[in-house]
Image (cartoon, rainbow, N blue to C red; front, top):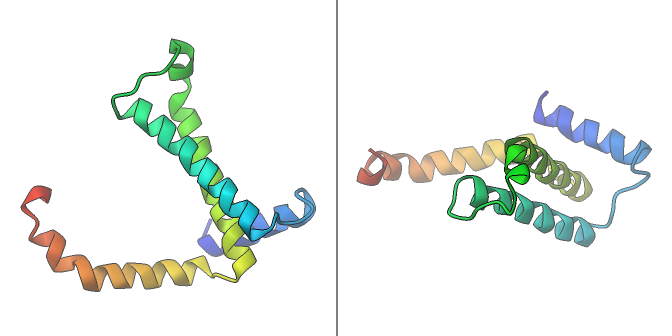
Length: 112
């Protein structure tokens, strides 16, 4: 699935199943909430925090994938609402990073 397909698929879902988009501010708040859920799982899976019960740890990897998908979904909603073509935006961002960071990362001893 291309990013363009993702944007179209989310738009179709919102306009049929979801009825309509939440406003941009509501979706921004939802995005922050979803990013927080990813952060909570990352802190427990890869950081020093532990799960409250072993049962919560058992499905954590699946939960992480689901939470990441939630982040992507809401980000795509915001892009659709604000007229951002994510394919073009990502390509421009990668071009910028390539120009800016190629020599910097290649010369970074910490990355070797």
